[in-house]
Length: 480
View 1: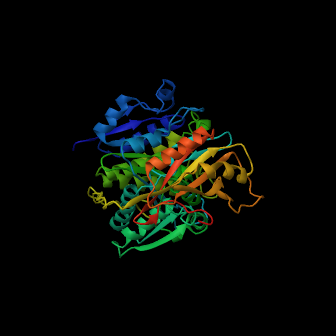
View 2 (view 1 turned 90 degrees about the vertical axis):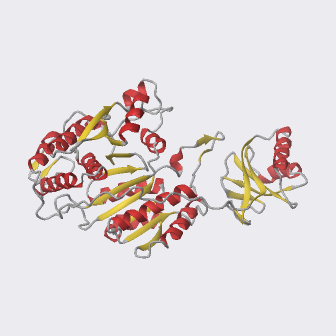
View 3 (view 1 turned 180 degrees about the vertical axis):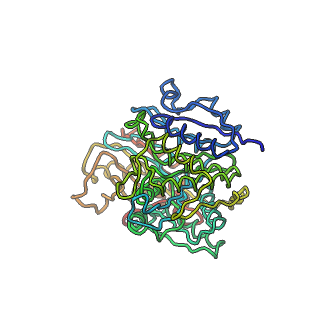
């Protein structure tokens, strides 16, 4: 049978060791793959490529559309972009899928029945990486949540649950605070969920959701979350299940998919031959299912489970109470190879069905645009004063005929009118100017900025305030 071309990167730190071990297992299991090796990571960064990947590597990824990647090291210091984020966003890998299982008693955990999947949005949120230093004392990071991006990941999660026999989806956000961004994510979850009546649906705020995941992981089935929360929750789940070192990850898009370990490059143990290849092996198993080789994936997963049962463990999970032998990276891989064709006796054997037909997610249909109206503007200032009344006295006369200063905040906390003297303040201020006439025009905002500039006020950022079908498209703030 023909072999599927895949792109392989050995990475940095422990990456080359664990990739060598994983490829040996894949070869022994007769996986039908044809690896193309590319170079990524630290050495590429240091040659002047700020994203850690060269054009020839992109050509391979576009051709094979399947990427098995070992962990990489990003050099310390500024100017270097996250390679993972770059690959995910450039190739449209919008869904990060991280299965988590417990393997008790062979891998120590307080929880015996963990079997959950975290579906994490992979392109938006704070991982957009849009940051600015605005004053001496304040920096910002923009949190971006889009309706199209959210609809895509929400539909993916529901389709994943339906096609894999899952029963429940838990959406996790912080929309009690971030009512617009996380609020949109929650709202789309509720809207799309109506199309899947057979699935249980619930929503949790991320703080209690994380606490319950740590204390009662058995109650979860599929967890859906925006980018940052999903990243954190998947590490919590993996560690609660026994070890982050056992967790694999799939990054899936409409055309390309990337498979990897959840953990990093662990340079402190690189070259010692003791790294656990299991996380990357789990990523490779997900890859085999993706490319239509579920029988090979099951053969490898069952041999790996049998190896755990037999107490053949690397140092990170070695426990004298259950382990029989402490082994290194390559010896562990050999133990898995020797058990190909066997199944575990106590752990549940792996069975993989055919991969879901593509596309899993219906093509996005954009809704009719809302009626959008400009009603005001937030202007942010770098101002070294401490008394908001003094800033208000400067801003009010500059508002003009069609705008009025209605509020001043410091780091989002209202300090005028009616602020409290106890409120801590920095050099980062916001003045909210709202329209007083029937219509606010862009020219009104431009004129306001001109007057502010002439007065010598250092405005550092503006945000136009809009209503959409009459509903405010901005946070109202205290007293608004």
